[in-house]
Image (tube, rainbow, N blue to C red):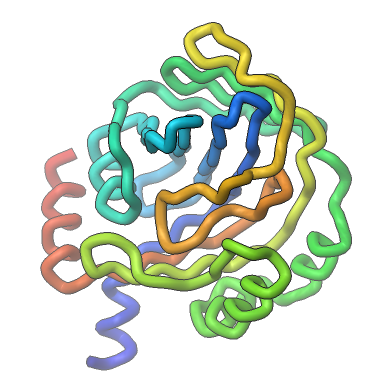
Length: 221
């Protein structure tokens, strides 16, 4: 297959991923995507103390794609809003209310920002970074096989630690900030164990049959 044909099957999502654990044992992964094939959107992946995995997604289109790429026990359609700020991010998604306090850019963030964006966003660079990422941050991977025969690459462009969390689920307090431990089990890799906000470009390569189905879904929405 030609390189051009492969590129035609790739969808790119440009934004941020926040990962945080809580004292209750609930672990949260927020995706905020100002640039995507379908315009801006946000979604939240939740793994409860008992291991139940839930996706909170704003539209059927987003839910279909994300649930086809990752694994969940429950998919919930609900409005998902993210309000990014210089000191804190606010998230509202169905039963979840979340405030994430961000720290200053750490040495890893400065290192990632030094890599030219065109290089950092390339799948080849994600492949190069996969082994170092695994060694430095157990559970983290920058490439792998996703659901439905899809392949995915993550390119990190910036990194900031999270210093506090205020989270409730149906009004119940989820507790103070904790590491993401055990790792979340939505896909081939977890977010970093240390709670963090990471600037990323995610590239998903679809099988040919899956591409046709996704294009039909795009035309129907």
